[in-house]
Length: 629
Image 1 (spheres, rainbow, N blue to C red):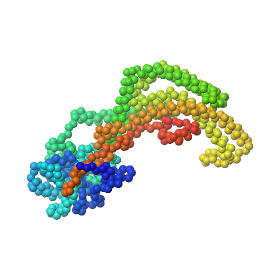
Image 2: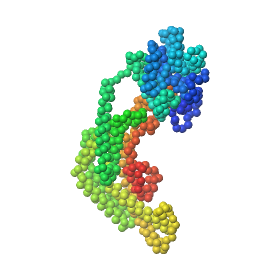
Image 3: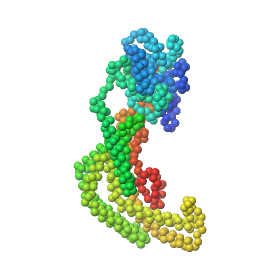
Image 4: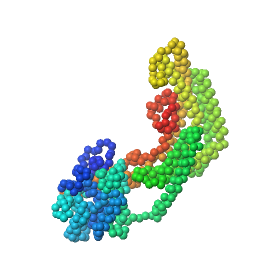
């Protein structure tokens, strides 16, 4: 028993155009012959051609009967879906196949006969099975047989030249490929290929390879809904032959899902209409809501819940998987939020945090005062411009005193505010983290003000020095044409420019030092907020349901197949076992990653350093695509 390498399977899959994968395929030839041209008659295949028959492993021990499935002429393949057992009436079999074809839009037909020689006399059974070819008349007509008391199989495909002359026929070799019908039915081949016949409703397959096999089994689910325990005119064998069991709770949940989703959809639509009121679009409220991370997260969760509880049925497996990932993400978020809320209330951490907030604020203000006093002296032995140094230091000290007075004024209400903020954790951990990010932004608002003052003053001096440097070189900035042009200056202009350039050069070190210190403090706050938002985006975007399927049911997400050789003897048909290769975890995350609110722009290191050097403000809350200052 040997193994066919995965590279050969990938090459065969690429040659069959089942899945388009990026990059060059492995250089392994396809062992199957070239299929006939599209639109050719399957009965016109030349004798001696090798045909492929996909046979379900669950039917290997089934009683003798008819092979029901789909013929794929582009690939010279037959996909067996079920076995019809004796006794049966041919007209009833044709009616059943017509019903399945109408429900699934798959060209299901009788492909041939299946013979399991356990107790039946070989002569009588053989003549009876040969006579069925004239009744159903499918070209090619497959004859699969399993010998009695052994594991030997015989497979052949016959092309009848006419219904009245079965003796004049040509036989082709058959390659038998076993597949697990249940896994193929439940799995989804990646990347998912939209077959043209599925959109047009044609019963003839126009896309081949593995995509045609997977699509045939998936769309023929109507055939698998009946089993041998059903009292019907036709008895079948397939993967559900042991009967179907259902739970009363599951059925009740299915019946109740519709009204519950309808009620929640109406409730969410009312909330969306209330949030879209004109009152909330006025300038102060719209400006504040666009800057708060909590509002962005609540808006994002509202969109997700609207999609989850929508009464519209998912049109594709990808949409169904997206809904399931969103539902699991919301449930996990709420569960983590409730755990956090229980932990905060059980240990009374909110009261302890409220009691420690005022001392911490006083300590931070004291450290900032020491820092400013150090800057107003001779920091690191540098000689600063004393007049500008004193003005800037006193200006920033005054802001610190204002901030401390505001904190002490709000101290009686801090504990109550924190308790109400803690209750918001029942909406989810991401909401609590967003509120924490907004609280950090409010508590460090004075640091942000220091950064803005220092950055604006530093940027003004940098632009002034660059303009005066062009004056010395006889250049100027053309505002209309947005370019640097030549210009002649008189003596007075050069003298005034020299004085201003000298003043700005000697004042630049003092301004640059304040800008550097407060920029480092601002970057520290932004880094803390960035870590919080990374955690929020991770919870919002992680496809937990898909990862759970990959862990517990790896065949549900298929990246391809591999083949294992079961029998390869001279004079016997080649028998292979098709096994599903699961999708790697990295591709699962990349394929099913959920969209996030994404309210933070991505700066490259080069652009970030350029902005910091020229004193341009960095707004981490700006929406992607908005114009940066």
